[in-house]
Image (cartoon, rainbow, N blue to C red):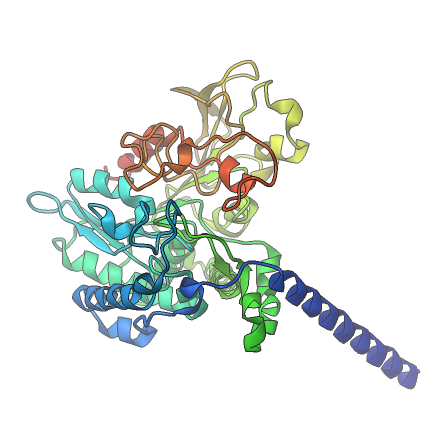
Length: 482
């Protein structure tokens, strides 16, 4: 019996190895047919290490950041062969070259209010993103009397290859540095907030939990999460396997999940395997810590959390936001805002049933320890939006008209849409300053034949890139300042 078991296990191991080898060969075959790697996929800047950031201040970080941009120009931009009319953020003659703009939003920045600050906020952008993504909130916070510290997280804002070297621990060290700077800028006792978008939401949450355990870290008074990366797809856990062939220089392209032209001045289009792996490691560490702190009752000390999340999100797990975070929270004034899909009769017949009814199945039955608000259609015959709010510890639903309609051609929000108002110059549907950054991606609605567009996929163009409910969302954020 023991001998037969060993034989079975040996055969199963052999089969597993053969399957893995076959998958790696397939991976190599697919990537070798893909685009060639460019300079921005090969040159890697030198960021401060985790230990260096923990010993550094804001001025040190900015000094190293400036050195990175100087090196990037010398090693990438100055070597790029310009092609007329090409949209390339690394070409000096391209209209999307960031250095041409009045402000290069790829860089870390601080905004200071007039007079004595009322408080401070730290803004943390998402993966492959840049400090651009939260700039509208930054300006509003400054106008409300807050110091704004928006850090460019290591590996971002420069070249996609930078994400092949950094770790999630580096991002956490940068978060701690930004909070130290924010705390220095305000009077003792003034409120401190932390806002995170996507991967930045995971960092904001992880920092807050760390601060509850470490007295040397300042605990924020309020945490605001936008499309937070509390959980990602299970594929990200094994993404590192997809990059194994890249250990051999001949198969360097296997280190990338996507190799795309870089026409967006403030966000990478190309995506390395390592970035996916680091996002999973971060969310895994966060979920483990949340569960442990819930069991130890440390979550009782958490500040209020306000989260905005679309029920349709192809980047992060909406159920994980509820299951792994909100269902563990105490009754501490936290609120979850969900943006429903457009339930109007125009789109309902075209939607997957699971997505159309997602809002009905995501939440546990009321009463809950946290307030929930669902932004949805007033009726299936109407594009008018209402907010259906159920306060914590109650079962009563209060409906409030928002005075805002779902755009008739928008069937849902998306992961990337939430932090951008419709007037955003780059992502907005109706940009207030069209082509301010070389192109207005949110206005593109191309029609034509397949296989004509070379540099973008239809998926990328169709994805909703701005939030029609942003003015209402900003009001909700401003309520936390009171």
